[in-house]
Length: 105
Length: 233
Image 1 (tube, rainbow over the protein chains, first blue to last red):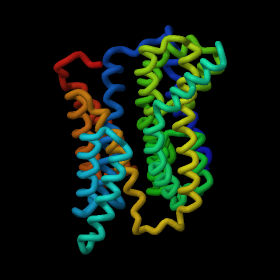
Image 2 (cartoon, helix red, strand yellow):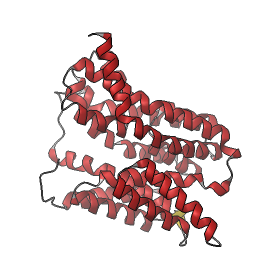
Image 3 (spheres, rainbow over the protein chains, first blue to last red):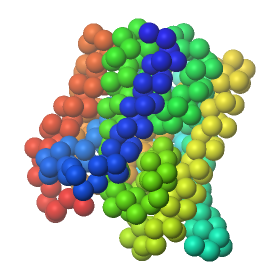
């Protein structure tokens, strides 16, 4: 399948998700169990992607390196400040600094 | 509605997400670099996904999965699962949007992002005028849309020139970490997130790159079993 078609289907599907309950307001309500599941989508999917980005490389487990440390620092800054910008500054900053200080990182 | 009122609601929306929009710049840049380096998706189409899909996390996953040889239906399926959280925003905004003219009601959702949706849901508790609400959402939505596009294309075009030693790709997991932390608000969120992360890593090597989906669904399932001390908000 052509990449453009794949992107187009993903785009259409994403739009339909965005418009879903806005379009059907009054005709469909989400059952409580479904609502509980939807509320868990954000934390679980974000954790899964973040974990994959930090702990894996090329489909295998990433050996302990500077990224683990930099991600931990970024995570702590995210938790204390709640700021995306500071998280990026702290995470990228520590990645570069540690990479420069520690041989092999 | 007075045009000055529309303008002031629009600008309020702009200001409400301005700081978050700054965060979209490095993320968009990193995504553009990923798109430029893709072996399965031409850079032009990868860049266009910022317009067609306009949901960063799913765009990264889409290209990542196609590059690693996953079948197209799985790449799309994963992207849509990642974006399923927006059904929740759709539900939270539905009552407000029902009062908009049809074109706005069906056009504005295209601009829905985590940032624009969350900011609007909170603001709409006080702001009750439908005209002000739609201009506010438009301002917030465009304020996320614009830097995302600029950063994507800078990344796509500069891709080859950015030295690998900058490790700009690390901005992507950092961005997800920055979004993850505030999304964990209840005990069930924390348990679900931990399970999702651990299972995803444990599922390394599962065929079809299903690890991400297995991790997410396991996290949701386990999270649903956890009782939260206070009523969920």
